[in-house]
Structure formats: structure tokens, C-alpha cells
Length: 504
Image 1 (spheres, rainbow, N blue to C red):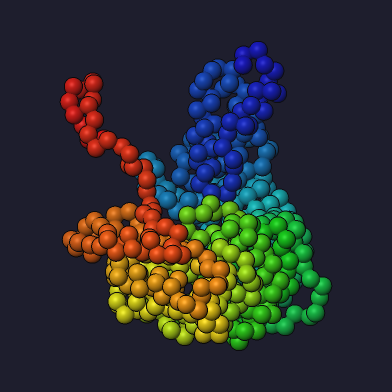
Image 2 (image 1 turned 180 degrees about the vertical axis):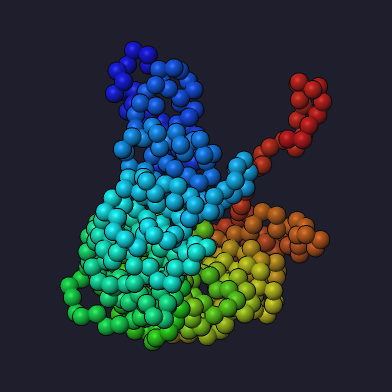
């Protein structure tokens, strides 16, 4: 290293430093930078003599560290971060206003700011800013005229818990847009405002909206907005009316993360079949790429569909969560998207979610290949699900319900081996099905199914009946699933160092 040219050493240091962003990872960057300075005298000289290394001014850093950054950074751009984390910093933490005021002479050099709104800075034009993360601070600002009403120089925008004076043309060429609770009764964000920003930002990569109070106006009919680089879409606490107004207008062919959390407000069938239509191919593609997706029936009036299902690597992924008691239209919607594609799973996680009408609505779905029954505490509801799996289709008695079911996972405690045996005999032993090709069924039981659970003993499973289940024609296997880390490990081993036995 001592023989390398300075320019090459600078490049090596750049690779060694953590990625710089608008979060408190900037602290890690500064610590690493100071650690490099300690290695050798020449390294210190190179670091101190390279202004672009000195970019973070952070409120929780000691004042002398920030002063050194300002001194060594020359005229290079600065990232200013005000942190609300004040514990164990070893010095008095300034207020946001005092911190920003102390840096006022460098405002023309700020390329990024992360902190609360303070008076006198972010309501005027700042063409040098490229990224901004703002939230309402201790000094209440009723409504912010963001950067004087012209923020087209920004590429990264994240606004939280504040009112902004919205207007068309406010943003352009964004890469990141995050909005959380950013309007009030007098200054509402509208669908037109948001679509205007999206249309002006063809390079958008990240869209995150938490907008419960939004005006759903009727934007003029305009061409579809294609966002080829948009990989992250997250809507939360949005009405399906607002979400639909946005989703029907955009296309995101490269999206790998889709998370939608809606409150039902308008006609659910219209939202699912029309507004959501442009995203159906994306949902189908992610499901197919992951090989799985699933819905969980829990207590409460909501519908949740996720991919990947549990235990599958998390990229790409989608999550659709709707506050709606109308589960049957949602199930029909999933069936229409997936059609006969395998890998769809159903999980029953609460007895209140087990409903015969819901079960019957999915009986012919060939995409369902896995069912999990968790702690459905009411035995009758548990038995209802098992009975349903064992019965024939109401529309086609020569086929069983869920005709392509491959795995039944019994993670709850309210089942008995006899009830499962009755189910498999009913599913596979009907004379009507002798000439029908039936999908073999694997029955999975978690390891520890015979252990204590808290202060209670789990029900003892009859091993003889389990053997009869396994021997039933049509049952591929009965297996135990879960952690295998200790399988085959000796319970007690001899430690040569201590000359004593120890647990394995």
C-alpha cells in the first residue's frame, strides 16, 4: 500500500467505507473513516486531504468531529442529519433549530438533509439539495411551502407527519418518493398531484405511501405511466379508492417488492377486477418465481395474501392486506389470477376464521396444494376443516375437495390421530374415486408434537393410528418437520480438554 499512487489508495478507501445514505449509518461511515486514519501517517494525510471523504455532519457526533468535517470538506457537498437518538452521546444534544442554525453558513453546500422541519430553511428554494427526509418537529409548521414550491431538483423525497402545500409540477425526476400523513383538511394531497409526480419521474425506483387522508379526485384521462425502474411499491393505510386511482394508471414491469395494505371503502369487486387488473400479471409472476404464496385466515375482518409463503427466500415478494370481511370475493380473485398454477397454501390460525361457506368457496381450487391448521382451539372447527378435506366436491362427486392438495401441516394441538385417519380414509377410500387419479397427500407434524407446551402436556398421539394413516393408499408419507439441527447428535460426549462428560 505504501507504494501505491494516492489516487489508487483513495479508490481503495472508497470501497472500504460503508455505503453512505440518509440514515444514521452515516455514524458508521464516520467511525470507519476515523479508523482508517489511525492505520498509518500517510493514510491519515490522504484521508484528511480528500474533501469528498468528509460528507456527514450528524447532531449526535461530538462537536469537534463535526467541526473537523466542515474544515476538511472544503467546498464538497454535505449530508446533514439530525438524530432523535440522544442516549449515551457524551455531550449536550442541541435542539434541531440550534443545530441547523449552527450550520447556516454551509447551507449552500447541503446535498441532503434528514431531520425535522425548522424555520427559515426549507420554505425557500434550495437548488443544491438532492435528497430530503423531513418530519414535523418541535416547532410546529402549519403548512410547508416546500422549497418555495419548486422541488424539481430533489431526487429523494421522504415526508412524514406534516402538511405540504401541494401543487402540480412540485416534483420531477424522482428516484425515491415516501409520503406519510402529509396532508390536512385544508391542504390535501390528491390523486392528481401524485400522478403528476409519477409521470414526471420515469426513473422512479421506490414508492412508499402511507396516506389515509387523501382526496380522490378524477384526474383527466391520460396515457398510462410506465416506470421501468420501479422495484419497490408499498401502500399502507390507503383506501382502495385512492390506491385504485394510482394503480390503474401505472405499470412497473421490474417490481420485485409489492406490499399493499388497504381499507375497503368502495365496491370490492370493482377494485379487485378493474383497479388491480394491471398488477395481476406481476402477482402471478412472483408467485410462479417463488413457487408459493398463501393466505392466512385469522381472527378479524381482513384478507391477507403473501408470497413467498413461510420458509421461502424473501425475494421477490408481495403482500396484499385488505381490511375487508368479504373473504369469498377475495378468494375468487386469487383463483382467477393463479388459475391451476400450483403452490398456493391456506392457513387456518383461529377458530373464528373457520367458516363452512368460505371452505366451500375454495373446494375446487386446483392451485391449493398445501393446508396448515394451527391452534384452532374449538375442536368442532378443527374437525370441520378435516371433514371438508375428506369430502368429495359438491359439483363433482368423483373428485375430492381441494383435488390437488399435496401437504397437510398439523401445527395445532386440537387434532387426534383418529380424526386424521377418518379424513384420509374418506378422501382416498371412496368407491367413486377408484378410477380417478388422486394427488398423493403428505401429512406433516412438527417436531416436538409430543412435548410439553408451557405448563401443559401436548396430547399424546397414538403411534399405531399414525401407522394406519401412513399405510392408507393415497397417503405418501407421515413425517415430522421443523428444526433438524440436533438430529443424530450424541446426547453426551467426552470433552478431552476437561476430562469430563458434557452435553452434546
